[in-house]
Image (cartoon, rainbow, N blue to C red; front, side):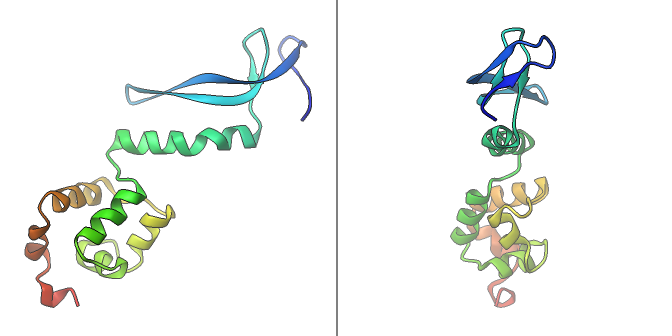
Length: 136
């Protein structure tokens, strides 16, 4: 798209990057959103424009909801000395759960996120959930 016409007023739109606010559960995120904008206030986003900020919005929403991001899940799992399959079996979610969490193919639940946070603060508590002989 090299030029766009506003569907509301018929004026020529300009390509720009503008701040856009998202509010979720009372929390606000401002992102720099590329798109086509008109002086009348209308804006048009292409799929590519939306993709630029989608990951940022999803991460914001997960943070508000208390869901751990993939890098944190991986860091905590490694700190606990667990392989992905072991973590899924020992902590819950199934053998392939942690692979999905760490690849962004799935998200841990709030309960799993909270469990991982607690174990991160005190890794010795893993012994209470699964003694070493059961982790093999």
